[in-house]
Length: 222
Image 1 (spheres, rainbow, N blue to C red):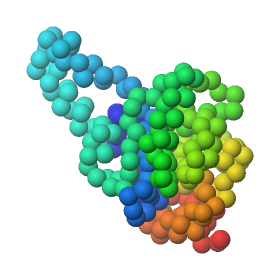
Image 2 (cartoon, rainbow, N blue to C red):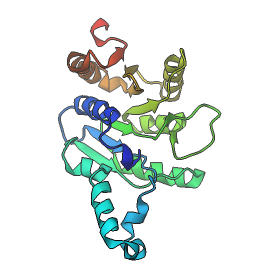
Image 3 (cartoon, rainbow, N blue to C red):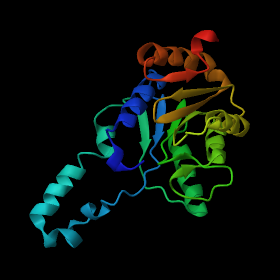
Image 4 (cartoon, one colour):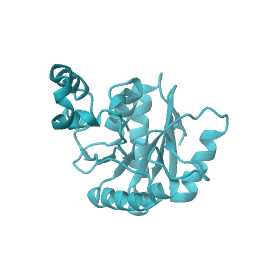
């Protein structure tokens, strides 16, 4: 997730979905931003950069800081959520430490959402900070969470089915839902004990977003 994308149309879908899927209670949702640099980090270092054009620097800083994941957290858009907003790096050691910290922070949470820049890595993909590996999704599932991940660039015909199968293999989930919008797809892997809860939540998504979000399997057919 990059701060520059805060508030775009995919964010509207994303938060609309999360607000329904998280349900009531204080342990409904953990949001792992998987936040990556967006090129504006210099604005956090005024001692180094402000001196060249203080007026410009201050105006840019106010403008950019109005669109950050921190603002989303503070706005109460996801009132039941816990957040992990540390910068995400792509190296093997960094990834291990990052996800251990995430899962410790989200202990006891029903649903953990991962928000990578691109989505799931292909099976032969190299480590980078724009993708979540299916094994990392599986590790979160093994800690007792149902897990949700956003995926961009899913244009190939059988892509959704193939990735759903990869997630099923990695998690052994009782149910895999996909929520498809014009530009992104969300994959939800459901713990056995959460099946009825998320079936009800999926029906609510269908009720409110039926004209914009395609759900598979259809929760009304189960």
